Length: 291
Image 1 (cartoon, one colour):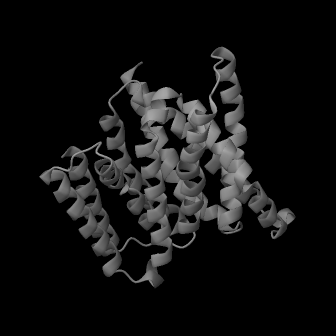
Image 2: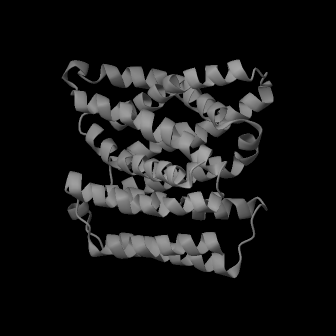
């Protein structure tokens, strides 16, 4: 594939993920976090079904129950809890905080992988972990929540979002080798949408659906289609053409893009502690990944 086109797709993927924070904030002006999460996961599941059906038609294979059960558990952490916690966290914190804290995901993956004996924490990686933690301290210690809208509650839920995806990454490594990305994501989103359906219906009854603006509905659709379906397909496609480390390097752009968009579109404030803490965290993550 043309390298220019490939890297353009990767940048588009990062833009979709960065825009997810902004669009989520817009949707949360009218939709409750639980309702938005149910809509996002449910819509994404519906969108994944045609892709899954097309793939199954071209490569008919029977999935044994143990493998399906494994994918369902992975989907619980990688999709259902991950995206539910993300939206709840985003409703109580700023775009910049959310993007920066989720940037800790590679560090959490490293820690979990080392606990499973899959990675070895070298002195350089340990230094990166320590630096990243110092960055979190800077981010939280010197910033008034009243100015940025970031709260400990929101940041903690965002951290749990990153932890769920890290669990999915570490424990799902074998599954992603055995099954295609379409299969893994289709099972996760469809199962998550079904599991959340009673909650989604209950939340829908608490909303005046006729009063919800087109912008809020479009925001929910954006979150389902672009960062949930298209971006993940680009991500797995890119992994088949270039090294994972090179793809992951683009993740450092996400907090920068998201924070800039938060300032430009939502009028959020970038304080000195956000810039300093975010820079220290990203430096620590970079060092840990390259150690």
